[in-house]
Length: 193
Image (cartoon, rainbow, N blue to C red; front, side, top):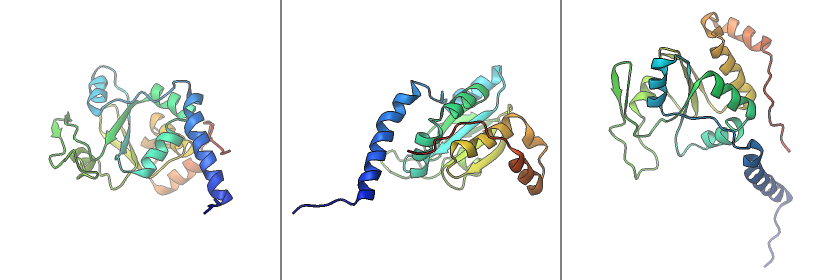
């Protein structure tokens, strides 16, 4: 029996193959220089710099989409690498480290499980879902969590809001709304095929 595939399905498959094959080639080796949280905390001791943390899980679909569509954007890569210590942190992983005098781990982690309990550090940061990006200041204190999948333009706003220290002078919802309205985007974004 001959199966006829719907044109939308074929188009989606062609786009998926195109993006998955050509996107890595266009980056020419550029990528965010991800660190572990332990590495970033150690670097902060000698050269204070804010931390940009991508909190993800292995099972999170939107997390994988951010890796493909947002963290592969040339402008995002350059800005994050230049201005932050970028950290990739599995919110359900088994990493152990000390932060501000407290030891964090995931005592209920089971390597064979697809989903694990939340890491103690993710709980400390107030993570409520994935993906979430969290900014830490130069003293490794939490500044701002941003929940949900962000495209490059959305992420640009928060990267620059934190890096410029504008977050220190925005004290209420009205001021944030005005900041967003006045923000001038500079990052190139993927417009689609």
